[in-house]
Image 1 (cartoon, one colour):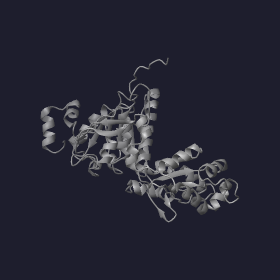
Image 2 (cartoon, one colour):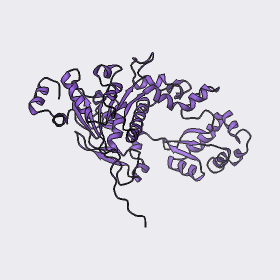
Image 3 (cartoon, helix red, strand yellow):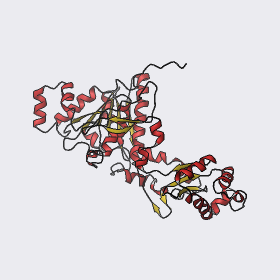
Image 4 (tube, helix red, strand yellow):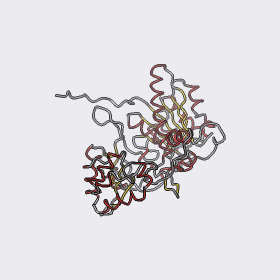
Length: 402
């Protein structure tokens, strides 16, 4: 019998994070920390808060970006242009382990909230600056929205069809920066545990996404040519594409070697002679005759409904996938079988959310706290830094806190 493992504390319990953050890159990074048990205090503007709150109303009246990136946090609304609001942030940071900011370039430094300044004053603090292009260089002051960085990093150049480059359908530059900020904080916490010193962490969206461009970047730099845009097809493998099925679905399949082609020809296409036909027997030949190869595969799958097509491909040992839309992903049988869905609280009631993909022993491996209303925790946090009710009332009356 396998011994039952006792529940373990979440790995970041006892860690406090203060974040002056907006949009996606910093909020998604700090949400990872909150999910792993950290206390995350989110500092928002008093005039509407994080502007991602206003992107849409798709999540039962809340913005989908905000719900995705901000569960499990405490919200305090402050005017940082007022010295009293800035003083509150400094008091919060004094008791924090980690500080994260992604203000416009130069804004944090003007407030004295840049990583270098904060870490010079407190060597144990881990402070993270997230920017579009980095602290210096000709692009340092350039506006850096996700789509723009996707273009600058070359992602758009390798995404889309031969005739039309397209951006990724998710904020890839924001997510890349967020995940490097997250891992940077974890690395700095380990270093602080051994040396007693935290230190500044810098992450730029451009550098994060340029790292993700590894294969095409290295291919082009070291003598090859940049990969061609091929939609769902593969530039040097055939057949490798999505093919329509009889019930309106699409199935993507990938034949990685000639043995798989022989099985596909015999068991799915029902054309065993194609297994050894010189025009199709090798991958090089199939790529050369890609149009005819795709026509053969497309004709066979068009006669099958999606379930039949997937069953036959899997029986033949051919890698395949359904081309699912987003609603279908929300009902994915694998996610359901692995019990990956939870409900998180919010100002509009429970909302469905995925467990984060880091699975740790000891039951649920994420806290997944509620999505905060703007300024929901302002009063409690102001009291925690030593303010009296009269002082808090004065800040609210003067529009410094909300």
